[in-house]
Image (cartoon, rainbow, N blue to C red):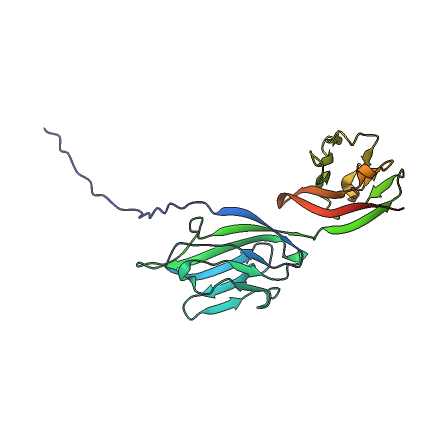
Length: 259
């Protein structure tokens, strides 16, 4: 007897082409209400043949589609007209696929994605390409700060009004630019602890009108006003929600004295 070694045939089950890609970059882009804004998207791939901008909360989600072949620009969502969005440049050879969004309104806030189709020597592939090729942008629309003068008589108390509509406010800060440090009062809803950061402003000098910020009233009471209190005061808030945390300057208040 003898033992036979048999070489069995190999059967190929699958071919796998592994593509290693860097994750997309997520960035936050703040813009003031009514301004124009550029949503950046840059690619190094010279074979780009199609770019698409989308916004996930829209139906349909595609805002703009552009094909290099034939220079065909298609705006697919009725909210975004040609006078509302456009590409920075339609020659994609340089890889600049940034989107211009004009006259921004509060309804423009959302998460935008830039994606491309690239063509190679083998075939055209729809791909999620590296950082410079695809970007995910969280657009934050903010109302412009209000600037006003608040007159007050020497020795009187005065309220510096500050009102926000955002229900997700988690902190408020009052500051005065000519002071060092410039922060007068800082207050966080979590823990409900006001912090007076400048030695000039004690608890008997300043306080918030309403420490329950759910109603958005962040007005500051300034007591027994002296000439040293004259200056420009700033109210700013930090809000947290699905878009992340951001800080907004709501208004500037300048105290002037009534003779």
